[in-house]
Length: 214
Image (cartoon, helix red, strand yellow):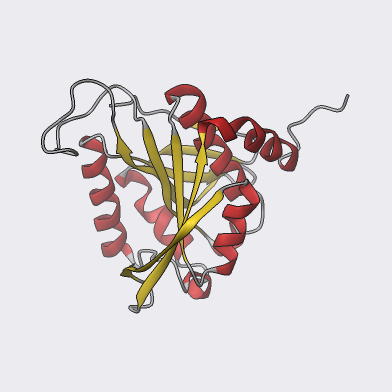
């Protein structure tokens, strides 16, 4: 399984998720919960502890890499995100396919998900830079073949942010899961392939102001 890392940018630093930041996460999630209509975000300390413990259990299995998001402008933890559904295609084919324990040194494909931000950090560029940092790790260090991103089909804001990355809409899976509002949710699936990463990377760098003038 991949070694855990801290990912640092100019706006945000993605730090290993741990129980030590539970109180910070509780404060971030409690700022204004009206923005979480289509996103399941833990509410209160007990839910947050369970959320972090579940993420760490999946991390121990090599299935996810969870981060706490620190907004460097305020030096506060303002949310969480993760590289998840890590699949390993190296080595002998496990039987049955997808059997637990069949992991390699680095993933071959992954999802980015479980992303949420405090209301005060939304629209600041923190989310965009967080995605850039995770995509860079996945495509440039792990050399994955694909990153998948998903959103409730009704979540116009989240879908717009994903599309702004340059991700391709693969389709909508109907009745895919239980939604954050306890309805049956249709989910929009997006992907970025390794062949598409150079263009996506340059687009993101330009939007983040990381491209030097000629």
